[in-house]
View (cartoon, helix red, strand yellow):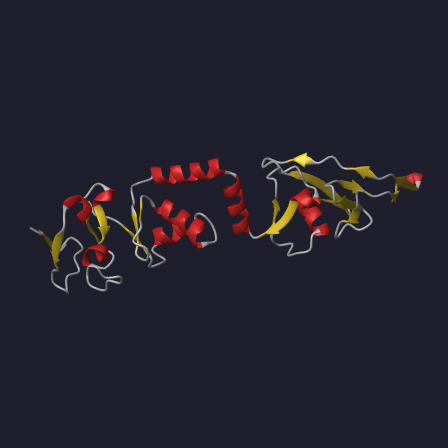
Length: 245
C-alpha cells in the first residue's frame, strides 16, 4: 500500500509517497467573486532535468520552488542527515521508490558510481594516462604516476581522498609534500627511473638526493653512486654514476 506524508514546509499543500510520487492536496482556495472553491488532489507530473532526475514545482504564497523528487522522498521516509547526497542504489535516476534510496556522503556516492560503472572508471583512468607531460613521484610508496591526475585518482580510490580530483589541485599548486613533479629532461622514458632510496637501500632518505629519480638498475645494470657536495642546491648537479664491474 502506498504511503503518503506531508512535505516539510508545504504541510496541507503537497504530499510525497514512498513510491516516489508527489501530489497536491485537496484544499479550499479563494477564487474572486466565486468565493472559495475546492481544488481536488492531483498527482504531479515530474519534469526530467538535464541530468536525468525527476523534478516537481511546488507553490506556496504565490511563489514557486523546484525540488528533486528523490530528495523529497528521502526527507520524508529515510532517517538521516538530509544534507548528505541521496544515492539511487540501482543507478536508475527515475526510480525514486524509498527502497532504492540511501543517504551517502558525496565521496561514498562517487565511489558507488565508479564501482557500478567500470567503463566510466576505465575512461577516467585512460584520459588521465593520456596526459603524460608531468610525471609524479610518490615519496611515501615509491610509485611513479604518468600524470598528476593519475596520482590524484590513486589517492581517491586507494587512500580515501575526498574526491577524484582534490589532490590534482594540491599537487599542481604544491600544497602538499608527498608528491613531487618530475622535471628531468635528460631522461625521456618514465620506466628508465627509480626512486633514489631504492638504489641506496634506505627506507627514508634525508640526503640531498631525497625524492630524486635515478636510472633504473634493472635496465642499466648495477652501479654505485658517488654523492656530490652536501651544499649543492642546483638540481642539475646529479651525483656521478659508476657502473659496478
